[in-house]
Image (cartoon, rainbow, N blue to C red; front, side, top):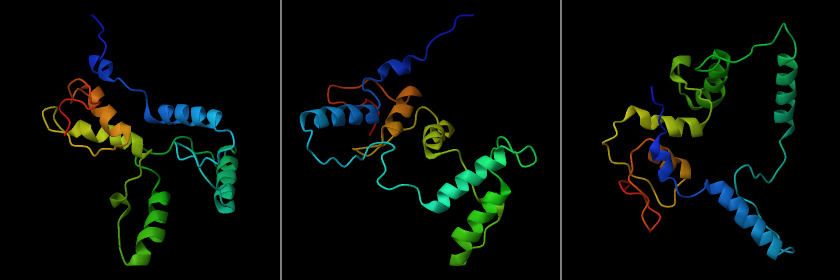
Length: 159
């Protein structure tokens, strides 16, 4: 058996957007040390966590450190108690009645963004906005839904 690389990865010509943002920011700050820079890249925040969030994190760590309350990895679709809390706090106040089976709890938008395309065939046309969050383009390139990148920085096959 011969193991082959997914050659679609070779189509990726640019680095991840936030790596480029960080590079440009560092370059700018070095050239302009007195500039008051407002960072808006990945993970950049302007305020510390609110006390309720800090307390919840501390409580969760304590829970995971005790054999009697340790839960390990949660179920694939999330815990029912979390879905119930979402329904109770985010939907019921607006008169919306949901069942826990109607609440989807994922491990994050990036995974979902990359994976949702897998339900569609490779021969479908892909349309993205410009500018766009790079994951929307890169995941389609890696899956083989595009051609090569042109001189204009756009991939063949994307609309």
